[in-house]
Every structure is written in structure tokens, then in C-alpha cells.
Figure (cartoon, rainbow, N blue to C red):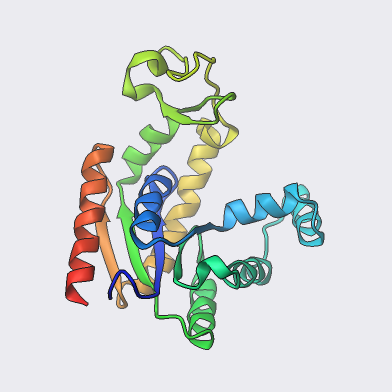
Length: 224
């Protein structure tokens, strides 16, 4: 693999594992977009597209978005011109069926098989991280009360706004999300483990994890 070539990456990891931060590192390294299915769904809903209205109706009933619908979103997104040199998937695939569909899709579009990077963090530590997360309603930054400084006192260090706890980071939601992830991890990680799969220790300070991600990329590029 060369950095100038097409690169398709999948970033696996539980909620709170740092996928967003490390995804930015990967995307910047290869000059490709990060594609989050969650962001795609929210964008469609906000834009009031026919697909977005359908998704909103599905979610309003408490039902899950189907594989077919998520697959449709992914197909639409990777057909855009900014994906011609590749892309990084965050939050997809979330099942073996989606993984198998993605494999067929990439092959049909003549993209390379994906390189899978798994940010692995013990679930007990993820729970601590997620319960400590707060969001600034003004600048939208996500912060941790464990970082010290103004955030530990519940204030945004950038603009002084009182921080809030997102619904996703409340104890009952954290338990549900991590419980669901255990099932996802067994299924999806097991599917990719025998392929181009790379486990990265996601535990520890942000800078240390970023260094491990960069080191893994250097190995991948050098081995190409």
C-alpha cells in the first residue's frame, strides 16, 4: 500500500474508544473523508430528504434502521467524487451481513479490500470514559471531567459555558451501548480477524494512542 494509492479503511472500536479523534489522524494521513453512518443518518434527517424523513419515522417508532437502508446510505456516499482516492468508514459495518455486503460492493466498484484498524479498549475503562464525558452546548466540543482544569468544574475551557451531559452519556444509555457493542465486537471483529486486520491498544493517554496509530500506519505503508 502506498499513501498515494486508493485506501479503504474501517475503524472499529466501542463507543468512547476514541474513533473520532483517531479517524481524523487516519483521514488526514491519506487525504480521504471519514464516513460515519450516524452522521449520514443525521444529515439526511436534518436536510428533510425523502430518505431522512423515512429514517426519522423509523427511529420515532423505536425500531432499528435496517441493513438495506444503511447500505443504501453508504453506496450513495462513496459514489461522491471526494471518495475517489478512498475513504475511512466509522460505525460501519455493524454486522456480519453488512460486512459481507461491503466486501461485494467494494469488489464491484474495484476498490481494494479494506484495511481494518481496531481500537481495542477494555469495556470497564470505556465505561469510566463515557460517564466522564461532557459537551459544551455553545462550541459543541466534547470534553472530559477527568482532564482537570475548568472541565473538572463543569465549565468549557474555551468559552466558559456550563457543560452538559449528552443523553448518550447517561449511565443507563452507556450500559445499553456497551452491552450492544459486545455482540457487535464478537461478530464483526471475528469476521475481519482473518483478513487485513490490525489491533491497536486504545488504552492510555490520547497522545500515546495517536502514536500507536501512526506507528501502525508507518508499518503498513512500508510493507506495501
